[in-house]
Amino acid sequence: MKGLKIVTIGGGSSYTPELVEGFIKRYKELPIRELWLVDIPDGKEKLEIVGELARRMVEKAGVPMAIHLTLNRREALKDADFVTTQIRVGLLDARAKDERIPLKFGVIGQETNGPGGLFKALRTVPVILDICKDIEELCPDAWLINFSNPAGLNTEAVLRYSNIRKVVGLCNLPIGMRMNVAELLNINVDRVHIDFAGLNHMVFGLNVYVDGIKVTDKVIDKMTSGEQTETVKNIPDFQWEPEFIRALGFLPCPYHRYYYQTSVMLEDQVEAYKKNGTRAEVVKKLEAELFELYKDPNLDVKPPQLEKRGGAYYSDAACNLIYSIYNDKRDIQTVNVRNNGAISGIPEDSAVEVNCVITKEGPKPIAVGNLPVPVRGLVQQIKSFERTAAEAAVTGDYHKALLAMTINPLVPSDAIAKQILDEMLEAHKDYLPQFKCLESADAK
Image (tube, rainbow, N blue to C red):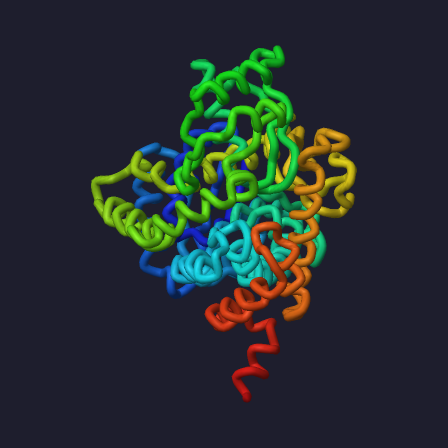
C-alpha cells in the first residue's frame, strides 16, 4: 500500500500536535506516508517548533510517517490526497481588532459572529479560494477539509465561487455538545446521539438519544435545574433562563448566547476587556506558553495544556472525518456540506451544518426538513448574512459588505453598521486587497 499524502495549511498552528496525535492513533487504518505542514514566512518559527515536536511524536509512536515542513504551498500540494486548512489571516493581532473595534460602538466583538465574523471572512475567503485554485491544478482529486473559521461561511464561499466540490467544513462544537450531554447524564459519550441541524455556530440539537432511546426531555430537565456543564473555553457560561429552554424544547449551542443573551454577553465582554484585554490577547499568552512547552526536546506527546485553547478537538474531528472517508465507515458525523435539500428553506447550493453519513464519496446529508418555527427565521437571517458576506469577500464591493454588516442580527442599525465597517476596513486594509475603495481613499 503506497499510503496517503496529507497537507495541512497553517501547519504552524498550536493545534497541529492534536492532528498528529490523531493520525498516529489511526495509523493502522489510515496509513499516512507523508504529512506536509505548510505555513507563511511570518509563521516560520512556529512551524519549525511544531514540526520538530511532530517528528518526535511520530518517532516515539514508531510509525513510518514522514513529516515535511515548507513555506511553499504548491510544492506541498502536488498529488495530495487530503488537504486541511487551519489558517488565521492577519494572525491574532487581526483577531484582537475584530474583538476590540465593535465594542467602541456598543456591539459584541467576536471572531466568528457579528462584525468580527464578517471581517474574518473578508480576510479569509480570498485566501481559501486561492488555495482552491492550487488544489484544482495540483491535486484535483483531493478532499479539502476546512476548519479555518468562520467554517460555514468559508465552505459557502468554496461551494459558490470555486470548482471544488470535494469540500467539507468542520467545527468542534457538536462534539463538545455531545460531551456535555454525556457529562450531564454521567455516561460514556459513545452512547449519545444528537440530531444536529442549522449552520456553523448556529446549530441546534433537535433530538437527543441514549442507546437509541429519545431522552431530550430528560436532558432539558437537567439543564433547567442548574446542572449545566461548561460549554467552550472562549464563551462565558451564563445560565439559560429555564422557561426559555423548556419552551424551545431542544438544545441551543453555546454561540446562541450571543443572540439570545446579547446584553449580558456584551456587558461581560466589556468587563473582560477592561480586565484582561481581548480574547485574542488572552490566547496570545496561552499560545506563548504552549510553544515554550513544544520547544522542549524531551516532549514527544501532545501536552494536556492544549485543551485550554477554545478549539480543542478540532483536529481530532478532522482526523476522524478523514479516517471515515478513506475507510468508507458510513458512520454519522456533523459537518458543513452542500445542503442538497437536507434543510428546507435554505438554498440547495448553500452550506449547512447537519448530521451526515460519511462515505468514501464524502458526507451524505441526513434530511431534516423544516427547522422548528421558533428558530427558522434566525437561521435564515444568518444564511442571508453568510451569502452576502461571501459575495463581498470575493468582489470587494463596499456596499455588499455594508449590507452584510447591517443584516447581521448583532448589529443594531445601518448607521452603526457603516461606522464599524469604515473603521474596520481601515484597520484591516493590509489584508483586504480586493476592496478598491480603500485604494481610492488612500489616493485622496
